[in-house]
Image (cartoon, rainbow, N blue to C red; front, side, top):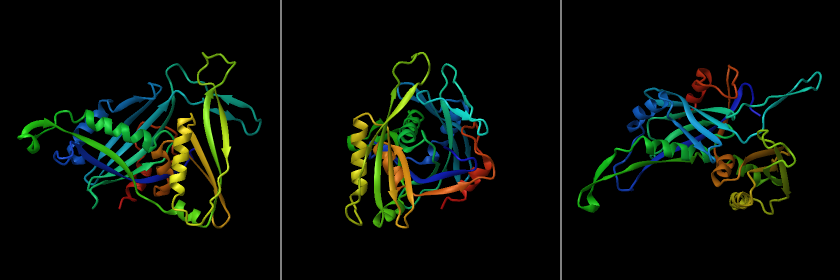
Length: 307
């Protein structure tokens, strides 16, 4: 569940390559006017997962030093929320209307100046549905659609004028914290979770699901196991092939405290959750589950963390 005032922020990098590789370099600044216009015209949106979910940029603000973004994600295939009166224990379910999906939003900020390695520093609020496996292909598709008129003289083909396009990639700002914890700690269990539609119900009722879980015990055999991430990634890959959508890893830190981290089962989900540098950011304002405009206080604190 999302906290009222706190969010984890992931430190990443946006790298923009070109296709073909020998085409001219593409800069973030080259696409900003088109990106702003696309957001303002409500065209920065894409349907995914067989049109059962959508991802969009709902708000944008460009400054001299950085670009502020607000992403939104909506999914029809998630269960409806239920509230409980903590005095009476009475439940109050909220049922969505036709065409609606559970919605979340997440802030992001991109530094306009390139880092020494040629990437652009990107900070992204960590929100379920707005992980790298959804955001990266969305940004790549959006940049491609906004850059249809790019051409260059191809010196490898008698200077013929050809089209080229940007290829956007997200990269993790690697943190060794998880690995450091495991150097002296232990993985105590891994839980694979799949959601299947419940039988014996009226299928006209939206999103009746039950969770089926299979628990696998995994211990760290040796200290300083450099292959642990590879093994977890391979397990997640196998889990996804067998229909599991989530993976939870329970481990004990060196000081004895237990921690559980959850993630999707794509390779990028695993890498993002386990090795990406992150920091907890506290806002002075309440952070709603989904909003239409950038929260200025929260964004200011993200911007302050740009290097």
